[in-house]
Length: 343
Image (cartoon, rainbow, N blue to C red):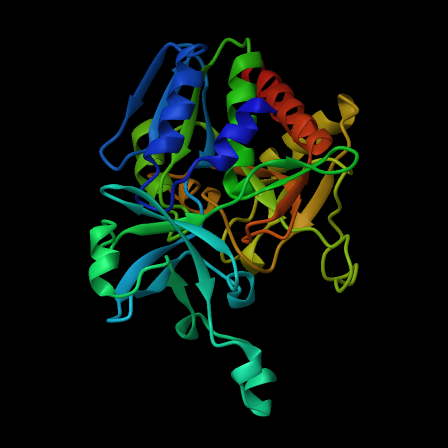
């Protein structure tokens, strides 16, 4: 899990994935025949040549923030990059990434002690929050190197919990990136397999669009994380996916507005799991979507599927996943590619 720790703790919001890309480049260069970066910033690594063409996809970017305004008293107003539930932001420690280095800060808001009764009943919106870096005025903030447009990430470390569980920031989708590297390490197949680490997924699936056009595979498998319902406040009919129950195979996401998995890909993933005795879960999603949505619509179309690691508290700084589920995801994808390439 050392690589997962490094990936989780690396900082990289949409459009600023450089640190994550360099970690992945170093790992993939050890096991691939060719590694390059396209114009948009996607990392593309090829293993093998000739035969059927497979694309593995995992996105590098994490949700984050960006400096929007610095007020005269030295407090920073910010906007979001990616989808947030505002309550997860409040009172978090953050890092502002400047041209002079990293500046620590905290997200604050008006304290409840000073709120009127009606204010206390309302959720604090992101527009009412600010970042305090300890400066006394705007001039001090500028001396620290902070500028409008600087990106901001959470100050969180990767930690092991009880049993097989681990927690950290950016598991969406550094867990997928980790699994992709491990699949490429273990694969020994007569096919042309591409590991593609994409940019800007959280703000519109942008990197996958250009990368899929470049590779144009016969089959694409997206490695992702997905929500679970195995904690208080979620009914089973809302989400039956659980930790420690194996990878989730997507059948439909975004109520069909995203990916409707092709029957042949569905059969490949399910039959592989059953024959290899790998536990799995089936997912019909109503919320978000993944890079597979844009990949499967490339040129004349691409057969595509999604295999996800169940993860609690997605899009927060304290995401939780199971190392057992991660390992089973790696094995399912590896075995599926081996079967498909040999068919």
